[in-house]
Image 1: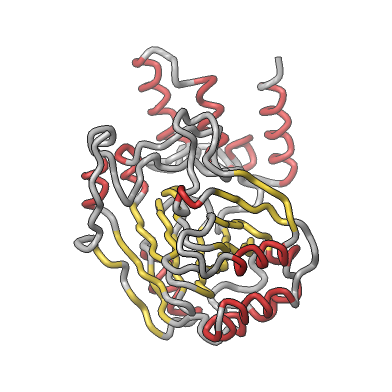
Image 2: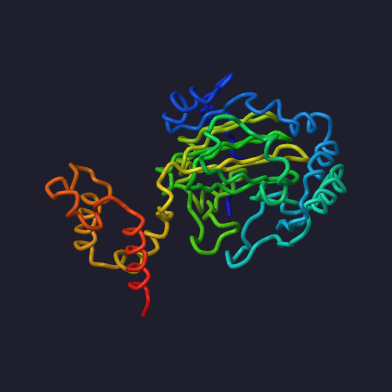
Length: 345
């Protein structure tokens, strides 16, 4: 293995926006489909003010909302230096999972906060409405209609690195404590990121196998090309980052105690599955067809699904379009039943 320290100083910087409100976010930011660093968006949160005082003050503030609902923590040895990852053979992990109360997790963090080489502690995707329900009125960002369904999660730990991955929903990531660095890449860099198993993952999403600190360019040579397309955002407490859907992001906590709240949402109709299910279905129906047949099916998908041309059903009255017509609840139900039956046997 030949590795070298990566240098992200020459990477493009994510555009910075000041004094963002809901109208500007909707009209000028989310419409660009580009990451955006919104300075000071949540600087007035009580949680951020507590974090400015000390990690202990933030922990005390959070404890007051603990519902005692168990969370899942990741625990690794000091040697992994916060890089929660696979084992060498990609069939296991370099950390252990443990269920515990949120307040107990905070105790462990604070117990080792002054260690020079502490064990690695991380709790991700903590469901805030269930675990810290009373805090919800105090962590509003004001950019999305409150009536729009959002998944609100807390990410907390010591110095750690989350391997590059993408998320299906859009995301507003709000830093509460500790500096965070995001390295972001557009989805078209997928071939250059050397993604690991799709169905055996650390926490649900497939991740890049490249160590963004010390890339092995001998094993992952195309990663040099990915680096040319990277954007970097350095966030301080009170800052927020807008992440469009399907942008790859590597996340690093730069201080001994870090906390961040994510707000995820989708603009798609509620009935829609993740397209990853379609891709998995295609493993059984398309991938191993002869090349000429795969190309033929590409044409079919382009015509009916991606609609690279005109409306494929414009010549058929709406009431006669069948499954290609309006997606009513009844039509959704029938489609789901048909798909379920097709996968049995």
